[in-house]
Length: 407
Picture 1: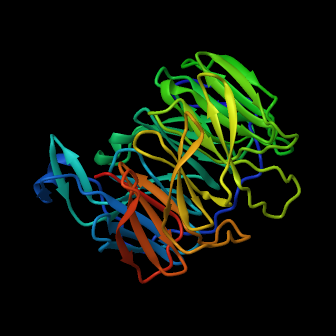
Picture 2: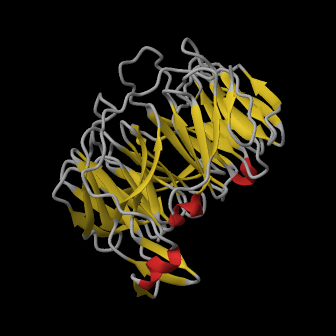
């Protein structure tokens, strides 16, 4: 049976085993969400937008001023919780054991004016079993529930007014997957079941299947490039969906898994990891992949250092950024595949065996890259174009996951 709410979507079975999250709800008192205008009347103003950084730690989540690294809010939360920017420049979505919760960082822009108030945990929530991927695309936020296969879509800016109206789509079977809704209403989803993950399927805005491709074993991860080209990773390359069609790019090695990616609207090229050891307990790859969605070419780049799944990011002009275990941030021209600079940031480190464990992590906001160093409980801000650290903050916790908002 297929289940749907508005608008109609007929989803085929999409499935893989989900990643269990063991967190539970915040202890902070939830704050209600009033209208943006009413909030502005009670908030302080500034001459420019106030970016904020959000980091998880063992026991909670902290909100930091992105310039001074002053702690603006601390929200105790048990378990392992994941954070993603909601896409409106203000809110952050938290994946907890009960589902998706929404944190208001307290900084936003309205009518050309910039406002700030204390961060607060809102009463906005999206119950979900094994909440998974959070995708931001074309003004919408797309949530994926691994435990039920349910996809929830809403306008990112609607979070300012409280619980947003949503579109909900549900697959026939529970699965760990990802969904992307395009500007024209098309929906791109992973395809599979609890035994295998063979590819993707695409629906039009009315729920009619447009196309599918099942030549993508181990499908995982997504990234959007310029002109809304969507790239989905496989154990044997990638699938590119653009202009109504799917193209498979094969890995240059027999096993070449691309499971984590970073895209940019400024570039037709997506940045991906690249793993070749199928049976490794934890492979520490030293190559990254560049997928050109225009020319349909896959290029590998030797970095000379390994990295983790939290090492990939994009710069303001589409630069490919990789935080290496050598402690440097490597900047790659996505069009030429050349490493243009390597910026020393932290001491050399080794990726831990458990994916939930803290390790140096990168988040980019406009022209600034933020990098955490759990070993020293520090966070660094880097000017990407100047190639240097511009400020460093010391924390009283060990930072783990990292995201932020522009304000």
